[in-house]
Structures are given as structure tokens and as C-alpha cells.
Length: 625
Image 1 (cartoon, one colour):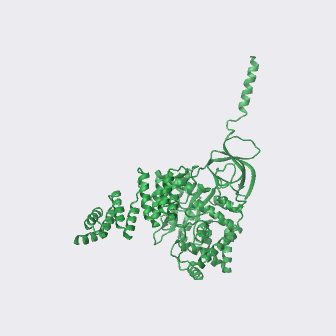
Image 2 (spheres, rainbow, N blue to C red):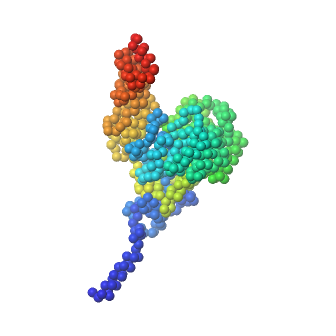
Image 3 (cartoon, rainbow, N blue to C red):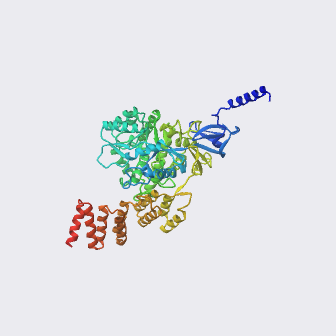
């Protein structure tokens, strides 16, 4: 070979290599081809587009005519693609189905995948890719901040507020509330949360002005975003805006910001012949009635409109919780409550007459009309369900907006951009753009054609991966046990406990036993506990001492004495170092007249707890005969 020709070939090879940078991407991980893209910022739709995804980010958006290579291609067939939805108000305690009596002090690492699977079932299954926890136990923060810092395609993005801040009060705080005793304590708590990496804090309704101002002043130094629930006439929305708050929780909190409850609650009760508050559903209904009360008085309506105007001028945002009020008013296809425990199928409004139920429905329509007015005036609404079945409830809220004549493009913006923007997550989420996280929803049917298509099947892309939904075996079983006979429900369970489309885990099985007991389906609760122990023999803590003791006392009250003794003996077997289980079994034996065994168990109880004075008195009486 001529040496000059050899040098020529070498030069050509070098030139060829140098013109193709090694960083150039020829093949993408995922392509979503031939789709219509909803622009959540402008509320417009662009057709004939292809979304190219690399890793967890959107790499390019190209015209359909532009060639590309991808490892996986989803044929869009001109379907609508939107950003993943965001729920800006959830509570982990409720999502995990904990009651106040069995909420753990800490979230353990070994149950992390179980907890996150529950989040996936509750939210990702329905297209909600991001959730904001608006109040949890303070002892959970160290664990959940790790979840926030390590998102994964199988679970929704989680961002936390820590505990809900309240001022010192006499009554026992809820587990997710934290009492702030004074302004110094307020500043220290902000510093502690900021050091842990929290970017949000929740200001709750019983937080007084001095503590609220101290938290906000310190929070500004750490770029903390504040989310305030103010509805007890302690601090109003207007006053909180004066302090610098811009995110407010729940549409229903508007009424106490224009009306003094100590005066108007009595007048509102009289107007609709209500009987006061006996439970959470009465409270929810009253919050709804207030909007009809406001509508009936032009002066109050004008006050509310002025509040809307100011919120719009101040760029304030307001979360919704519309589904809870709508389901209590009979305006949704399923029921859910602010109380996560126990799960119920309908509101407890037995004292309401047919006329009052009709009035409640009308009041809800009044509230939705005010929501439309607020939106039209520029108040930024965002989804915040604050209830059980959060993902399903979010879709229910989209339907409620549509029935209230909100345009579909506005509804989609409320469910996406408004929430992400309010939570300062819009740099990475909330719109379909190059460089944003690839959290997407591909609608099977187009809600622009019919708003009922919000409820139809969807393909969810989370972190650039196609999410494969599963359904909770345990909570599907609970639904069946609540609505069918026990034998039919358990037959379904035996047929489906190994179904790959369902997810069966010990924690959820344990939780549904608590719900069944609270619903007085006690035999079913006992069967579930036994099933769980058999299915997961190596799992610790599958039997709860409190629950078994409660079931035993239920049977005692029902005079099912043999069942009571069997359950309480089982509790002694499982918890032999607990003084209380012996005390309870002693009481059961006393009820059936077995003095000998009653004495033995009371003696053991007192041996373990010498301060059991009530047991000592009973034991003394038993020995005297």
C-alpha cells in the first residue's frame, strides 16, 4: 500500500471520530410517540408531538416527522398527555390506616417498602405522582425526610411539612400536631426543621398570632414555605396574609375569615334547624351550610368577594378538600371523610331530615359556585384531598369542578401547575418540558371530549418508567367485608391472595382488623388476625395487644363469654409480660363465675404491676367470697 494513501485513510478515520461527540445521544430510553401535549402553563394543547425520555427526565419534545431511536416506544395514537397530578394535602397517618390508638411512635426502615406500596396504590394508581404531607408525628420526620430525598419510579414523590404547629392548649393534641409554647420555641423548631432539610411548615388553626409571627420570621431566613389552615377565628386568612402567608388549606376555611363563629354559628344552626356538632360528619356538613348562609345575605357575599379579590392580588393559593364535603352532601360516587378511621361507606347524619339533606345538597352547590367565582377572580386553587382514597378522591374533585362549569383546561391546570407552583416544585415538575421530570399521564380517552373521561383508564409514567399498578388485597377484602357477607368475602380472598395483580402485605392485613373491629364486624376481625398470623408467621408484631383486649371486652359486653375468654387467653399467650392482659382475663373469668382462675389472673396482674389498685380491690373481694 502506498504510504501516502495509508496516511489518508488514517486522517479520514480520525476526522470521522471527531465529528461524532461521545456525549451525543442516538437512542433514548423511552419515547411516547404521536401524542397531544397539554401545556399546563398556557392551558393549550399541541398535537402531533413525540416525547423523548432519558433516565427520569424529558430529553426532547419533537415533531412526529422527526426520526428518533428509542429502546421502548409507546404508540400514543393521538392521545392526550398531561403532567402527573399533585395532591397538596395528605396525611401519612391516615393513608397508612393508623388509628389514634395504634399509631407507631416511629416509622421503621424495615416497613418502608410496605408503606410506600400503600402510597403507590392510593396515588400512582390514579395518576397522582406527587403528594405533600400536611402534618405527621414529629418522630416520623427523620424517616420520611429520607423518602423525600430518595424518590423512586414505583412510588409517588413525597414532600413533608413535619408536624402541624399549634399553640399551647388544654385538650390533648392530635398525634400529628405539635404544641409551640412560646415565640422562642417557635424559632427553635423552625431551625431544627430547616437543619433536617424541610422546606415546608404547616401552621394550624389553633396557632396564635405571636407564635405564628415568630415561626414566619424565622422561616424566612431558611426559605421555608408556609401552609396555613386557619378556621377557628384565632387568625384569619387576611391576618395571615399580613404576616406573609400565601398558601391556605381548604376552601371551607373561607367562612370564618369573614364571619365571627361565636355569633354566626348559632345563627346558621337556627337557620337550618341543626342540632350542633356531634361528630366529624356534622362538622363537615356545617362547613358546607355556611356557604348557603353566606349566599343568603348580600353583605356576607360581598365580604367573601372582597376576600377573593385580596387573595388574587396577593397571589394566594387555596387547597380544595371538595370531595369530602361533596361526599357528605351526597354529590359524589363514593364516600370519604376527614376522619381516616374507621373506613365507612356513608356519612353519619342520621338525625338529618329529608329536607335538611336536600338543603345540604343545595349548600354544596352554593359552595361550588363560590369556588368558580374565586377561580374567575384569579385565586389559585390547587387540589388537596385530605381524606382516605386520596388518588380516587382527586379524580372525584376534577369531576366536581367540571359539574360546576370549570373548563377542562382550567381543571387540568388546577390539578398540575397550580399545585406544583404553590409548593415551589415547578423547576422540576408540573409541566411537560425539556429537562423536567418525566412524570406523565397518558389518557386512554380525552377529557376534553367528555369530562367523565377523567375517570377512564390511564397510563402513568413516573420518573421515566411505566408504572405497573397493583391493587391492595387487604383493602379490597375490607371493602367486600363491609358490603358482603363474611363467607363470600373470605372465599374471594382465598381465590385471590396469590393473584399477581394484587399486593398482599402483613401491615395492611393488620390494619383492616382494626377497621373491622371499629365497624363492629368483630368475628371478621378475629378471622383476619388468624389469617395474617398464618400467612406471615415470621413477621413480628402481627398481633396487637390493644386490639385483642378490645375484642375480648366486646365479646364480654355482648355476653359471648366463651369467645371472650378464648380471645383473652390468646392475648395472655402472646403477651405474657403484660399485667393488663391478666387483669382482663381475670375479669372474664369473674364474669363466668370461675373464681379460682379469676384470682390466679388478678394475682399475676398485680405481680407484674404492684400499682394496679383496681385489680387489688377486685382480688380482695374475690378472696373474701
